[in-house]
Amino acid sequence: MFCWLLPLVVCLSPAALLSDGTAEREDYKHGRPYQELSDGLPCSWTCLTFTLQWPGGFCQSLDNISLCSIPPRVNKWLIHGLWPMKVMRCCSCWPIFLSDVQEVQELLEEEWPSLVKSKSNFQFWKDEWKKHGVCAACVEGLNSPLQYFQKCLKLRQHFNLQKLTHTHVTMTPLGHVLLQAALVCCRALEYGGIKPSCERPYKLSEVLNVLVPLIGDKCEIQCITDDQEREVWFQVKIRLSRNMTVGCDHHDDHPRTTAIYKGHPCPTEGSFYYFPIDHQRPQQPCD
Image (cartoon, rainbow, N blue to C red; front, side):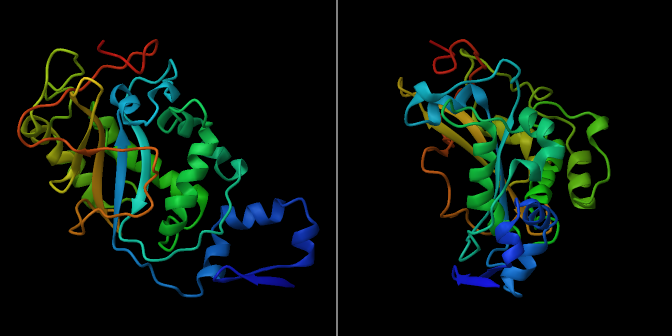
């Protein structure tokens, strides 16, 4: 048995070192290693942020907007990530392989594609797992790459910002509170009159009136300032407690957010734009 400190002890048998990695991948896929690595270490966080991004405004959030590319099939809000908040410590030594998420890969490509030219879909998922997923893995139901991404896809199904129909309202392991939140929402963006436009700016109160019944009043609507000094909506951060119920009281001071992205709360005074998606000119959809 070969061991080293990471700071947590990780041990590999000679067979594991000599194998093609299949057994190792299967162990990680089903969540077994975290129990071995954590050794009873409790979660250092109590809240998560489930973040959705709007492709029409996403490009403006990049330091180099020329890196942005929106695939032709993308025409809706996408997953950015599920991020534990106030993380003190977590294992950063848990690898992820494409085979770990193969059974949900098609859904991930639809709901969680990379919009950055230099980053493949899998690289995007891998980065999110390494930075955030491993921190969430101390909770049952999130304690493997597959379970983490499956949970994100279920959250995406519940939090459909553009349209909510009865087909989306089904009982799942997320619990009755999320189901109740979905039932309460009689209006999502499309039904509430909030539609992408280059001419029509929106006030924060207009957007919150539509979204709060669905995602709670502790959500954050994030904007970015474009090169013409316009406030552009590009992201929604939904506050969740550890048991995946809507709302949590901790402030979002997650230290592991990817540096390439930037943004701030949309202005409470004044207005902001909800740019349409332009696949040919993703960097300048309204110019």
